[in-house]
Amino acid sequence: MQQTRVTQSYNDGSRRDDFFFGRDEIGYLTRNCIVDRIQVMVWKENTLYKYDRFASAAQQHHHHDPMRRVKPEWRAQIAKWSYNVVDSFHLSRECVAVSMSIFDRYFAQYHETDDDKNNNNIDAETILLVSCATLAIAIKLIEVDVLSLGALSRFSRNKYTPNEILDMEWKVVLSLDFHLNPPTAISFAIHFLLLLPTEINEGDRKELFESTRFVVELSVADSFFVACKPSIIAAAAIIMTLRQPSTLSRSTLLTLREIHYCETILDQIGIDDEDSRLQKTQDRLKLLLRNNT
Image (cartoon, rainbow, N blue to C red; front, top):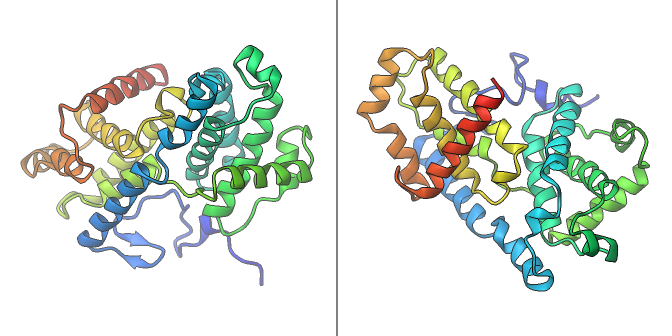
């Protein structure tokens, strides 16, 4: 029997990206379990998946900022193309966040050719091939059904064969020493929103999630956030959403203020409302939101 795609695996036919409060592939989560999972994700982003860990070696050997090696406009186009791919096949959009994390960390320690050294940028052909490979890896990690490399090849307008994409997959995997499953901003956001009090109505929960997800997905395509911690991006997106004019009910906003909800999620990641990283992230997210609405 053919295996059902994970994006349609819930009994009500919902997508993987849909938000269910407390529902997980393994059942319902208690508050303590949610907090524990957040702490594990924080540990991962501070250790195994910390961008500086991958970039430091490149800076030591090549004496330049690795984030400047892929032009921001090219990276933005790669993210847009990746979203088009996953949307076309009804896959989770979190695949793109994982793919771009792998993409960024791979190029952070990329060993350039002589041509790359001369112009301090990596050629577009290499970037597109790597993006095909990182998206293929991310889909394999998140989805049940694997998107064929032939389909990815066609989405690249047959610029690369399936074998070329597969070879690049292995290069990426080995380069990153199998560190392929990073915590993402949307994953942090979902866990933060699972800490909402039970009295918040379902409509406001979903509204808050959708608004937060929109902002977080904008950040995926912006090079400004390459070295930012996903937890801070998620917290900034939620706080910014709550402080903007919204359709959330007055009772919900009052409840969240009374229980100090924003402070609660910041406590989970060890920062406060005055942290400069949070302020800079919010400022950038506000700019992105203004430019995309």
